[in-house]
Amino acid sequence: MSIARLLAVVLMSLGATLARAESLVLLTENLAPFNMSSNGSNFAKDDAVKGISADTLRLVCERAGVECQMILRFPWDRVYQQALKDTGYGLFSAARTPEREALFKWVGPIASNDWVLLGRADTPISVNSLQDAAKYRIGGYKGDAISQHLIDRGLAVETSLRDNENVKKLEKGQIDLWVTADPSGSYMARQEGLSDIKVVHRFHTADLFLALNKDTPDDLVRKLQTALDALRAEGALEKVRASY
Image (cartoon, rainbow, N blue to C red; front, side, top):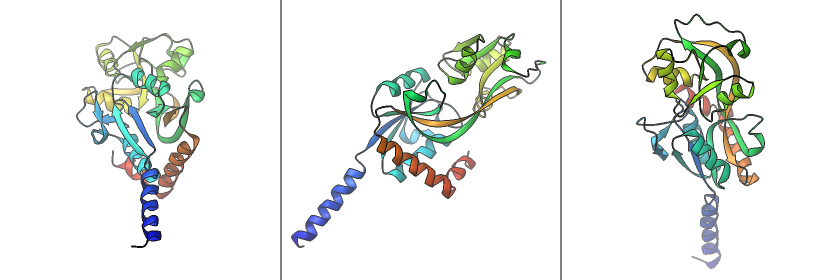
């Protein structure tokens, strides 16, 4: 092999290595059907993390040539704070709220989720606005954007460290309404054995994003967004959603 040919091979190999040199740690929690551990535990890594958002981001990272490690941990507030503080980390599936906008760099949307108040199927409660709901006992998830949305508007929300605790509270009549998302909240309720549940009030549709630490290079953010947009145009994201 000539020196020129050898040099070309080395450069090609080096280019491939550099293309994969960018890496991210993507943190998440159990939020079925978007992100969840394969065995239902509160810790999982890489292939043991599944769901609509997890599978979508695997395709995005592969298309973009970025090495992405996925770690699922509990609770949400812990992984949120780590992504907020540590360079090289990201968080999914995150709601892109005005309060969070400047705290992260964003890739998405990777999925969408409705914000709702859920009640037991036999509840007589009927509300037309969040203010109508203020007189009821509302349960929520600590650190969650949906619960915070109500708190910011002056509603009292009894937050739990584990969101599935709200299913039990609702079932036992300890709360009247559960502020959560749909379909994820309904999915969780079924997993916890409560199928007799209904949407009492639907008040927002939220797109879900990958939130990256604000020190993530802009070129890397653009590379991931371009890959996501291409996959969406090709119909690949719809196939992922349909599989769940």
